Length: 195
Ligand SMILES: [Fe+2]
Picture 1 (cartoon, protein in one colour):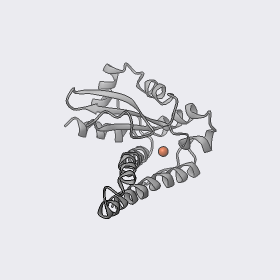
Picture 2: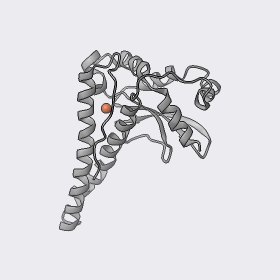
Picture 3: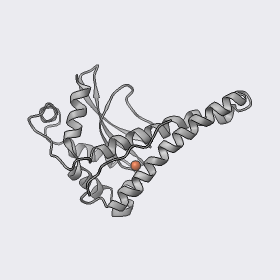
């Protein structure tokens, strides 16, 4: 069984406490539902895999939806802990960004986040190819690059911004996301992924 993590978050600029509170409630729902699916799978399997084949199949399919929702939100909220911190241009990540993204990384991530549909704009590190990868995970479980650790996770589901900015407010929300981002967390993830 997984337990919901607790996050020590400062008040964020441009993302209200109420929005964060509701968002954390949604995160806790993913944890709860993943645990429920895990329990039900055992129950159904014990009762008879043939008899419960349809239910088992549906639950197995939903596992990664709930798991990825749980884990991505943990990565997301941790990024705000200890307050906003600018990217250190002299850090390994800062230097890599200057070479690979020529200073337009944030704009690039916002462009990915602007894609239509619920999902996540994600920065990964590929330890095999020794390079960054960026992508859009539809919902939260589709379109990932297998085995690559997540360095930065930008939630662009409507629930992340609807309360503060309305349905058309994704751009303003993404601006606020990057203003509040603790780049120290991203640098640490990057350092650990590149060990
Ligand atoms: Fe979310």
